[in-house]
Image (cartoon, rainbow over all chains, first blue to last red; front, side):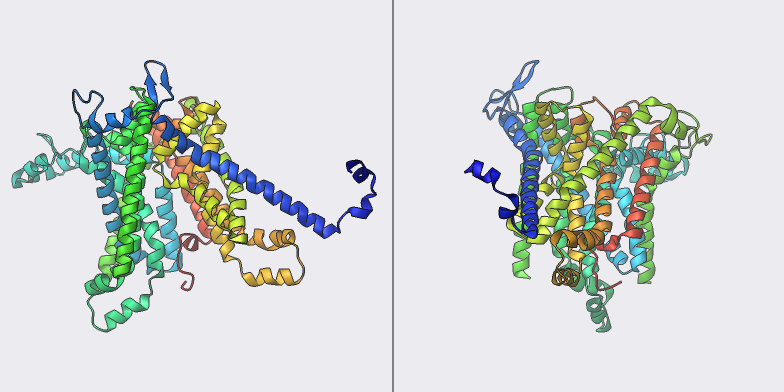
Length: 332
Length: 266
């Protein structure tokens, strides 16, 4: 049959030109589809699968790690390596700090970004574009630059503490007794105020880091808000605060929750700000992941296990958020 | 009264957002080796060091540029067919592909970074610059995917119907209608990926395995030895690139629309 096919004159069985072109298009489309699936599956999912698989592997002393199937790394995360002889909650404490920084920073960012974004959407299209350029430029700025900037502002021999001392603000604080309060909060040493290391500086930098994201996440919802609703409420005599509470807030409740959740997931893996500004006793899981995968205590399986736990934490919060949004949608 | 309060709040926010950036930028003018604010002996020498004379920084800058350009190009090339198929057919498998491609961007970056570190260690690409390019392309695939999809949805269906009634083939329609109308969105997606790749740190940290350094990596490495004004120059350069790129997007693309603004008002 094939031989016959070869000697058959081409003009006979060649389909009309357009059909042949369509066929070629379809083949090309199929090839591209296959290629895309391969690339996306391999590059997006295989790395994650590897993290999962290696997290149940075993560390080999001085030689990296080997495949295995053990819960050892997870047990170590929960109760420490010496368990059951000895129990430590070191790694759980780190996870607690991860969540605490991320929750506080993302809530602060979203709450302060909300009025800003609302006011921004009431401006002209041109002004909005200008603000967006400004925000996107700071948003894309690398974490290392932002930490560097805040570090200069907050470090003890330059920036704010020096400004406090020079302007006499430190003396005023001492005279009024606020200085002792700041010392209780860990924001002052015996001589002057200090912000490094402190939880305040960590959270400040982290919320700064995600603040432009918060604006951009709230922007679509707020810009679609019908201004006539607020106007109608106002003409009927509602005070501005009442308008905000009864018209604007209910309309953006779900985007608000969504923004907090997304920023939380992003900050959960925050690394540079924590290493620079947080007290070593209050370091996070992300720092520990780094230490175990690339740092001094090489133990890739344990680092992988901690990454999985970060992922699970993020997923749990997302599921809770989803539930919340569904019930609130049902109730409202 | 309330209007004043609003303006005050917006200006305050602008000042706080600009504050660390301004401080880093002005620190770049320091004459000595230490970062002071305000700068001492203001000079532009540090710019020469960063862009021309210090090999550590010029190499890092070169790597950053190669990675960012390569990753953004690759991301756009991957995103185009995915977005096009999704728009054209709306099939469930296309939607799934798009969702899969957006996963890396939605994860905490450190987790994907660790995974990619393992991945390239297996393939033997760990520490090579092309592994860095591919990694960033995948990480930022979601950005051109979103902008191109927005662009495709913005195409007027009437144009497509007209083309179809006049007997244009899919290829011809694609070339004469789809491609030109989505070009601004494609370029926006390219630039978003470019700028974010330029500034990305943690994923590149795991993928590079210290075999090469981009500017952000180099800065992080030097962080332990204290800051130098040359590092601040890097910050200035990066901010300048971001501002130029996003201004271009705002000028030739529709930035409020890309960010999801309502179309009915202007």
